[in-house]
Image (cartoon, rainbow, N blue to C red):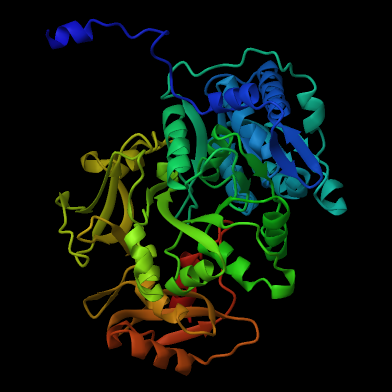
Length: 544
């Protein structure tokens, strides 16, 4: 027997099909047609109905000229229409571009033009924003308006001249239409724009293969059994909701939609709908914990909370555990479909003291089963650094859940993949057990008198103070030291602290050179996904 004998066996339609998450919906509708797929206020929709609506959307779009490679944008909150777009748009061969609903009109106009969107599906609450954006667009896409019954009367009253009603548009489609399977799993399925904090946003392109693999990776990492009940606290516009629109459907689960993330609403839905899973940034955990006791509800069971974004403060992680949540800490970027690193928890760690457990949970962890390679490397020599918990380098990834590249930006794509790895721009250390822990973004590291200061480490110290609700630390120019840490603080309601008190507190927990020299109290600017906008704070620190 030789390799040639094995190689002679042909790859053909009977034994090789493109990977795509779109088939998850067909399977759920076939196997569990009457199971609830979507909950939104009083609305209950079955998997059969969800599947039919998605195919109708696809057919209607195809009749309107949408085909392989065409972009369809969605400016929507976490509503049933947004979920339907995650299937209906790629079922045409088109590419779904979910737009951040908190972007300014100029940036939305840029994304629409850069992505060459032929259609925009918009919630009526966001029509004024889209109207301003369209005045700045070079071309005018077809606009389809969604009238959501859960929106306010004022929001539902918004109209855009010439727009088509979403339900009327769906009515022109046929649920029996033979939707388009990707001819190649490398075909684009989605376009996601980065936050653009250092310039124009970059268009990150996902393919069907990566979306399918990451969606299944979520099932495994989030411990998601059959028929989960998933609360949509994570924006679906953010990395396509970390691929959970496809993940939940793969397990024939319930998508509990939510227009806005508010503490009382989350507690109510967790209790009344039997929520089992939810995702979000640390700010969502803080919102849950800060909800007044009178507006909290007893939970019927433990809720799995998958958290990513900035490393959650140890104090918040400990408080979530005390409140009865199981926290799964993940890490990723837009360029890797959302989470691709997970803090795999060891049963033996449960016997450790609570502070030590929180410290272990604050680490980002190890690669997702769907990610082939993860390393902390020297970006200049491209060598893997020692796993000593101290040597800092750049987090590098490679595998099937890394983006195709940046749309229309060959140079940025080349730089991102230099040396055969995806350069994340995040700085981390590797511990002897192979787990990584972020120490900073490369642009967020503070270099004071030649010493590297991790802003995350300083923030962790501040979060331990009982009066601190939210903390962010950035570099402030200093004539003597080059730059020094500057802290921006939001205090807990009803609690107080002075700058002097917090500086003294940090001196108890940090080396002297790491202690903030300046402390400012104000509401911190945040993105729609709860990430603190440090670029804004850097500007304030320089000017203040």
